[in-house]
Amino acid sequence: MPPLTPEQQLEFAACNPEPVRIEHFNPRAVIPCGVTIEHLCAAMNDFLGFIQMVDVRLHENGTQRIEAMLMPANFSSMVGEFMSANLPKHSPGIVKNTYHNGHPDMLPAGRYPGDSLQHGTEGIEVKGSRYLRGWQGHNAEDTWLMVFMYDSNRPVDAGEGGRPAMPFRFLRVAGAQLTKADWNFSGRSETSRRTITASVTNSGYQKMMANWIYNAPDLPM
Image 1 (cartoon, rainbow, N blue to C red):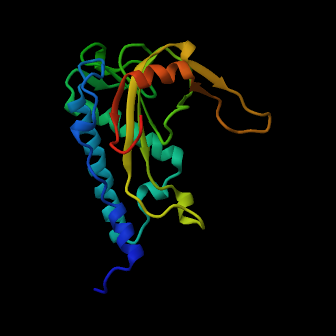
Image 2: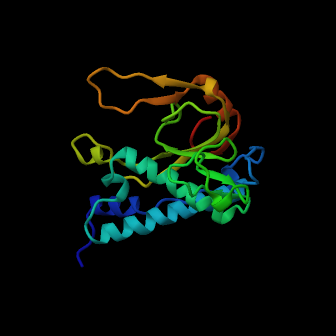
């Protein structure tokens, strides 16, 4: 087998993200339903292992890494869905909401029949985001929101001027109880086909950052 070119070496390195470490979590973070920073550390490393497994296999087939292939919104959704489905494996006090498009994403264990709830306020709503603020949702709601912020390549990086291959990494996790007043609906023009969304306002951002849960060691607070 011929030696890998520098570009191939960089691409293979991007398939192997570094795990998160417990010392970069906030031991004073307050999280509902008995979730601990140890539970979150384990679940986040599960996701990193998943990304590594998928990306290495895709690389062996000469295919783009999954984060460089999927539309950004779809990949962000995948991050959130994985975390809400996998965190209960480590945290016995919380379960995945089995109701289709139910709210919130995770519920207190044993609280609802079949762990299914169309809409409620108890539990944790989960989002994955590439952004450190300005997080969006479809509705302005009273909810305990947890956001997993991350950095990764996107499909646009394959074009001219795109960023070089880089491993996926979590940047920050924050969570807090938000009220409807912590959201602001984003309008759209008459010609836009974008789904109307609500964004977390500065008051919500301040609540979230006051209860930060994880912060990458090289990311200023």
